[in-house]
Length: 361
Image (cartoon, rainbow, N blue to C red; front, side, top):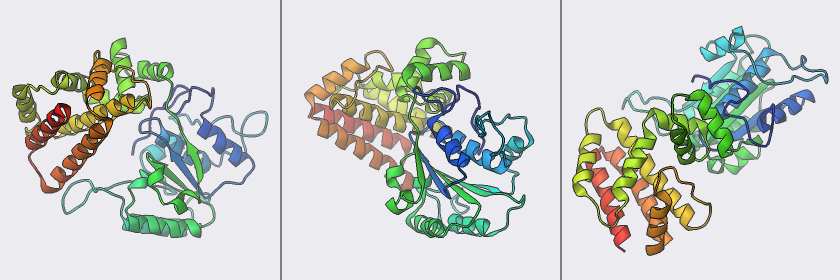
């Protein structure tokens, strides 16, 4: 997997810290006293730079750099210039002492697996049992650790119970609560936070300077403060799709089924699979924002004009439990449709009919 952009305003910065992220500083402090845990868990929302931090940690250990640093004896930063040889080798996947584990393609179905399987973790055990090719550490990063299936998680737990020497395991998780408690308890846990809105917009200005200011603001709010997620949404036309979605539901319980059918036809085309995925994700995101705002869990900041007024009207006329139930129902519908290869247009029609039914009640 390609590394994420480097720089002082990179995705792993937090609003309350300057110079280092909280995660970087914790890692540096631990390395300074030479009591490195055998496993770290880096968790937090998607798109805030967890893999950037994991790669920085790995590069630091593989560089043998922990004795060089600032006037106090420790390294001043985990930053490594992209033109350094070690950086380029890791980016190209050419370092023999670093392994990255993530979901892979199923050779039978030719589709991405839904989880990390036990054979991948067993291979990791063999990797750790080997002598380092360069005489230092052997390091593995598990990207999306919560996606391990039960057999894989149990295999990892055995590895954590008897960790080999000079081996470092970095678990990156978007939802650490889904990991086994016994796995979490054996890791040093770093929780990364999203940026405050102003800092997140600054990151987006640097990465996507061609966007208008109101687009950047809308994307950051839609991505809930995650610059990485906002950039992914921008690449998929997420803000425009979200505006179209709100246009379709603005008059609920009335729906323009001509427009809904046109949307279904568009997403049902041979090249519409990616757009379909974006639409399903945005529909569930809108329902999530609707219910959290209606429950008073957070103040909704408009990503698109009119969003707050629509949420106020819908949550005022229908109980929040019904909207939560609908959020779960649409998620289940999308999963079942993928398993049985249901026509995408039918999924879209069923989702909007469920919206109409909920709003009427």
